[in-house]
Length: 325
Image: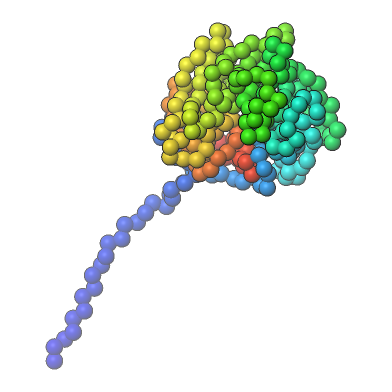
């Protein structure tokens, strides 16, 4: 009888590293790893908003303050209490002719030297401030609401210098469907409001000026153009003479991914964290793309806590954060 010989063929198995690919961040330059880990993950904190915006860290209360432009409200979030209503209304009180629906609330927020909240108010079409306290009947004090006697469109975002000058953008997002009804200025401007009350026009040539931030040395301001179809880019202006330079061209990224250049902030390293195609772009001071935090959708703005432990991000419908180094 013939013996049945059974041969076992051993198929080589390639063992993968225990380190798995992190889909939340794409790193293009390892220098960015000094401020964020390649394993950083997106952590959703809350959802069910309409247009969350204006993230501002309140170090005194260890909480995030943010707006919802469509709900005309300001909210807070903290580790213990989650989301709470804070200030309502936030951006529309009848101060100026505006639409009764749409994006009428406050957008960008900042603190002044007295820890009052400065707001970019879409509906009231002004920069104003109010006390940093919970209220359903807040008192707003106008900082500035016009350029050469003509009302602003809908101030969107702002950056404040160490001496108190305010740089801000004025796109048409408060106008329903970009209607010209109520409009008094026929361009979308970037401005400087000096502490002496003077308003200077920095640029009137951007189609959708939006997020704005000062460089660490305050020699430059960076301004996002939130126009993904026509001119997705970041411009840089000298604060001394408003000389303009293209800082980052996002045309090719915009062809591949959803999302545009909306809000942006400066990290203490000098790197720029900006909303953009596919999520958050991290860009060096020389304009090199270092990494992308991959949200895979449109988001609106971002900001750091005072110790830069986290980057807080507002989406249209949610708020989230990413751990930093």
